[in-house]
Length: 139
Length: 164
Image 1 (cartoon, rainbow over the protein chains, first blue to last red):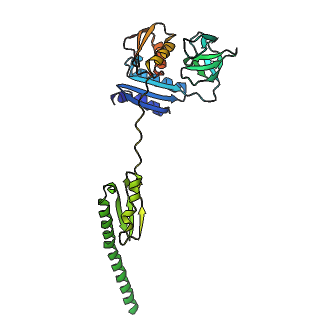
Image 2 (cartoon, each protein chain N blue to C red; image 1 turned 180 degrees about the horizontal axis):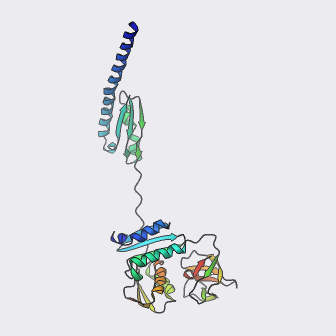
Image 3 (spheres, helix red, strand yellow; image 1 turned 45 degrees about the horizontal axis):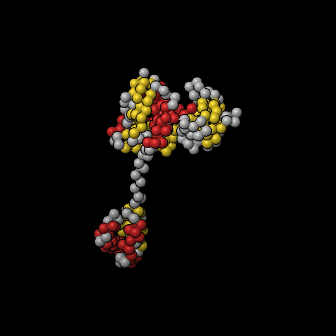
């Protein structure tokens, strides 16, 4: 219960912000918070609170897994790499051959996001493959 | 005069009949309570009797017990009717599912994917724990931690990490 007290501000904020499918579970001295945030802003807010309670996220007693809700009608995603191109690969994994690239800031077509980490996308040049979801922002 | 007497007589009879109703209700109540006592399952049931109408209330543990409730008043003398307000206690919510931890092999692969763009850190995966070592800027570490937390690890151990 001590961990739930430590991160109470975070779980309270998650509840207040309308995180759906919110699950707060403590297991083997690690607290797991899972859920889906309505917007990216909400996710950022939660991570800010996490950083306030545990500066630099180094204690390792919390796994905060909050995804941003992506509507079923979303078909376009923006490439949000730091500044480089985004690799598009044949399969979901960095061990897969690169079949294309999408430029930084480019808007491409989202085909399938059944894999949490790797989304199937298609560029305007009709290059189709898997890109790392962290670098894609739904439009 | 005669009318007054008659009215008085009616009044007395009415009063007596009302008063006599009270012990009767109490008797019925006692009889039902005795039956409740005889069955431990029915212990949560309470009974109230008014003018021969028995009202049963309380929460019983299951449907089988609930089915026994009408028998409490069925053959009790003087019961005109029974109102059954008892209900079955809803089952407790199921305990939360345990946290699913990704097995080491797929986790290692996912960690490799997630850390590809962070060449200054090294990771090892053992028993679901992702240990991160090396040096990394605070904002980059935050992004990386977000990715790693999304891979369903047992924990992310950055205790040996230098943030600068």
